Image 1 (cartoon, rainbow, N blue to C red):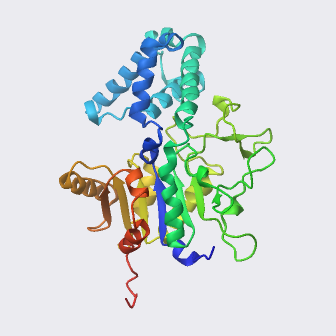
Image 2: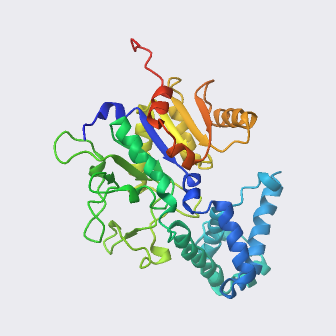
Image 3: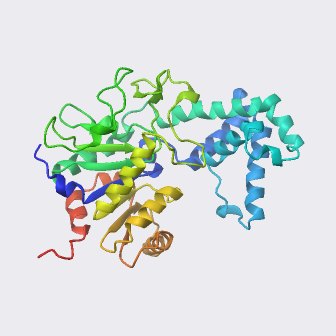
Length: 363
């Protein structure tokens, strides 16, 4: 492969949960719907129904006190799991000394030492593994559009993903390398940040650099706390999955998360265009990095999003521009799904045409 590493810095991809929905991986709202169905119908889940109703009601009540109702309430699978996790901390929570007493009904529903709440959260984590690792491997086939895109661009693509699934990793083959920070799969291969460094010496550059900002379904830690990746996820205990799921703080002060966040900041400031696919702009620390990147008015943000009509598309552009404090013309929304985008004809040509030229360019 002939590479043009200078141009590779012009383009950065950001993948959100919406990018994998068409691969059979449910979005957050769909996960909540399935949990509520299980709570009503599955004997293993039914005993948590009253606890779930209490937690959900409390989340909506809290939002209502702040003047947020109905669709304005941020209630999703991560909000639910984060709330349960905070409840589990009980006496270890820093606010515990300031709380006179827990709600008596909550204590009763959560069980001794909040053990029932822990069991409920664990059951959700077990379900998460099934959600993000579907048995049907044909679903993510549209991700193969990235292979054609890279070959047409003729330089490595840097992809920052907020997803736990393996849709991008599955693109890897003997003639198309996806760099994930691991030399191989298995306990003998430790994650190494230096694998993301470009070098003119050494092995051939990968076709894709993949940065999984919130972890991966096949990551875990060995006894020495080294990060490793495994081929089979079944053997990874739910509590040992190396993912940032159901936690308010999405930025961990440890590698690989700190390194990946730094890399996103670095390459978003080098890029001339950032392409966001399936991202709902719900992560504050990601939004801050994007906002900082867009302080350079020559930089553009291309968003792939489903829009009902031109009015909703323009509204989306305005909404995101306001959120990120972008200037007119910096935020571009292209209507469509991730599948339609990745499988589009002349995708490389379309992207290159949208990348703004430097102000000192002679063309």
